[in-house]
Length: 343
Picture 1 (cartoon, rainbow, N blue to C red):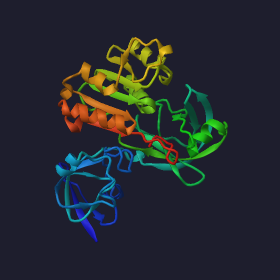
Picture 2 (picture 1 turned 135 degrees about the horizontal axis):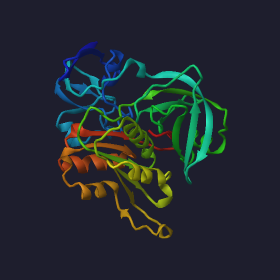
Picture 3 (picture 1 turned 90 degrees about the vertical axis):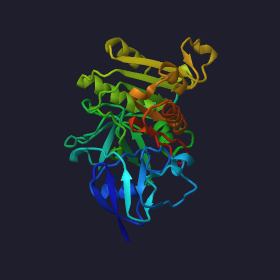
């Protein structure tokens, strides 16, 4: 059985089978809706259900949707299946045809330890191939066992001589154990992308707050380098939350940006500084530092990327303080031995 799905305010319609999620059904009809992790964790694909009913494969496992949001009529498009005709309030993502995901082989061109647990992996595409993407998007690495590991692109689109990934070590992780212990320059990887809707909405005029946790710095780096390259004049401020000084890999880079760009500000925040850090900067949780500086975030656009617990804390704190939900964009990273990519 197929149902009719109507999108508001665009008025676009598409059909969805009862056994497919709404995100996949929309993509099948050439419509791109917001998404991030695609497994119900991050909440990036939330939409308000204006009419109709949806069902979930596991209604008890929806970490990206709070009980209040569920009660208020929100649905997770990556998990929700239609149980009737639907009307959904959701902002569609306008993308070019050239940005549709593609599968290709890429060769490892470089490996560089950026700190104690982050490796820069540089991938070289075939000479006759190019990967168009929006700064902030990610790719999937398809392992030999057939598993997918998602990693954000750390380089901006204009600097695409190589694809740069920031891979954080996860003990026991199938892919990261290989990256840190066995990977060699020249190795060929299967890549699928670009994916994701975490990228700067350049047509906006609001000042921008970017919040990174750990290697969430990778897509934020790409977004900022793209913004500088195109001459974006909107105020941009980065809050980067990590545990200790040693976790601020490439720390000199945002410091240099702050010197070179009058519209950019940088605030590193340590949650567990070590005695040897002799840290005199901000401490605590990154969302608390942001709110202390911007107690009324209603006029901003916010882009948050990092562990799910951080992204959820940023979202909850800022929306409670007045940030319109439509101005919050996120990508939540999941780490684990069986899923050791960014998601």
